[in-house]
Image (tube, rainbow over all chains, first blue to last red; front, side, top):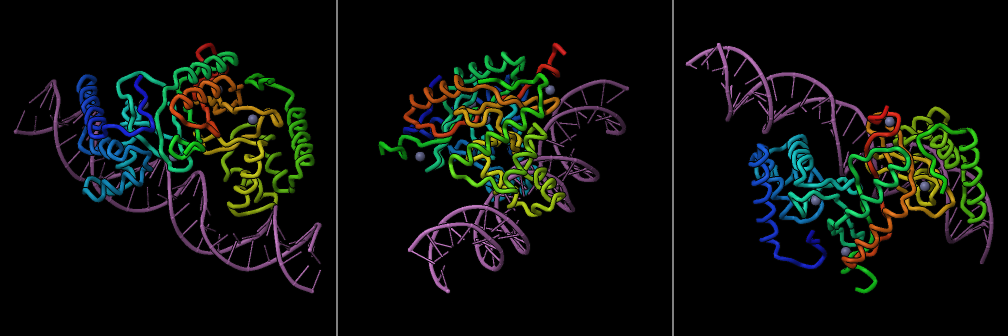
Length: 158
Length: 158
DNA sequence: TTGTGTATGTTACATTGTAACGATAAACAA
DNA sequence: TTGTTTATCGTTACAATGTAACATACACAA
Ligand SMILES: [Zn+2]
Ligand SMILES: [Zn+2]
Ligand SMILES: [Zn+2]
Ligand SMILES: [Zn+2]
């Protein structure tokens, strides 16, 4: 997995490619990437940070794509349930997936200073969690792994 | 760490001992375990499951210990910030710590069927998370590791 | 006494999330 | 074509969760 980290990157490309992957995957699986759903994914990709449902809704309102909370929540639920976006529990917010298509345990690093959120590879942490759970006879279905701290730009080094 | 698992246990003892530990630790550190704070901890311990702030508030109201949201939130914040309780992000809820006093990375197993919540040892998962974060130059301060799935009682075996 | 710090009490509000119900549109068979 | 089904969308009205702000009460020290 290519960890989209805190360093800057070719964001236009990053966005276009994620959108293309989503379209491809929806076509494959017979999912309907409707205008609202597609636009919400674009909004998340554009911003490239965690947005609350009501932040997304503001964009939709401005563009006459919907004005009531359920519109945003439905689109976000669709994106999350199909892996195109993730929900950050800690922030009650949503972010576009950085690795669409790849099977991965999302794992988020949240900077408490600048609010940047990065999706890190969390396979090992998730695996450790599964093992600890198995010890107690618990079958893990979904995991949420979220860390709060300081990103490179805001850290002591900076 | 003694993993308080899904099996039944001597709850009266579990509760009394946690309360005693909290009192001891507050005495040591000069923290004030005021009547409201103490009662909220008792409520969490009694229920032995995740309670929303408003659930706690209902108890407080019934006992004339406070009637407005801030009362519950303040007490819960105190308990969480000193490690006597934890917040479960996924549920917007709080639970008494199963290992008060011990330094530990909380890690929760949430049954989607019966809503039981168990605090599992999460040292390894947390460590894996820290390492993945370090790769990206991110300094982890706090972690939230939460798994949703089926507990032994609700699982396929049952 | 007076200040200082901590904890409480209270109001009023902000934010986040949903249940429910009807309207709409595409897909498909009769 | 027409009716039927299904998914999506639009909207209202509300539930649930969380906080800012300010007043009050008390303990303790200067
Ligand atoms: Zn992802
Ligand atoms: Zn930062
Ligand atoms: Zn704990
Ligand atoms: Zn269960």
